[in-house]
Length: 402
Image 1 (tube, one colour):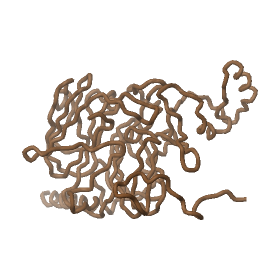
Image 2: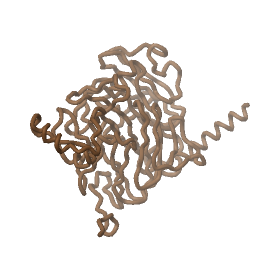
Image 3: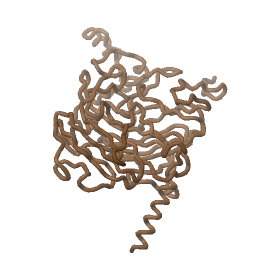
Image 4: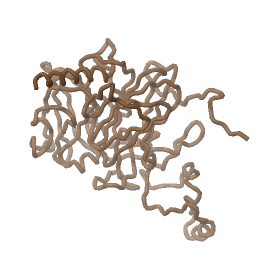
């Protein structure tokens, strides 16, 4: 039994070393980028890495024209990404500035029972105005989360979540050049309001990457030939099939840990189940502007409405004329599809986004919500700023023919 346990521990160490990337010599890990987000700073106190989190109300701009009154951490939803290294002893000081008690659960982390963060079970709830200390030694590496286990229905639906990234102690291979983490979330923000409805179970109308919707989502920028890691986390009510264009991704880890290299598999669409994380890797080997999005078609639209009647194929010409007498400016919709509607802004309630139609280099891009771009270029500035639209080389673009 002892020999088997030693073998399993040795195998787990080899898997961790094989499945994760090499780090540059200048620092112990490649820092993670949280698009539209931030990384939480820390300080060393008697050998312990100490972080400070504040649970508080947050006003988040999902996109220009839509402000949402959420709850989060340190002024943001999702909260800032916590980065540490396997073997670190960490202390997270959590202050509660919410109007109700809360707690923080470290999702997927091996730790003492009293640090698990379940109010009423493993701890007293953190009352408004109180600060609690969570302290534990990290005994694993991978992509994990933090979120409340107190009034979960409300607090997570209002935006309380964040990443906890644990880097491996030993520099693994192959090398990762760009490392991104994205939280998947869905909301019901009724037209004309600013407050998410935490009682929603199925009827969501806004879908976000890191609490942003396209075109406000930051692009993921990489140089041609670089190896890219994507970390996704999901505490929403639905699974999200994340699809990438132009490359294939290898599924390299879950929130259960790294997947052995021999067991990894290629995909272009990976479902991220509820309450889990998925880690994916690919080589950015072809320049271009490549979409990355949820493949549930309603999840790449804004201001979704489930009560619109189906008018496909219905001749509305006579009806539209009569209705126009009663409602000046009335316009029939949906008879021949919705493509033309994307380019029109027919007015909408305050604090409500258009369904899609962000401007692109060749016309409107009929997607919003869970949508962003992976921008791959042969040459980039050192800081990985947005390089703008990709200039497609002559002779390599689709065109009309006679």
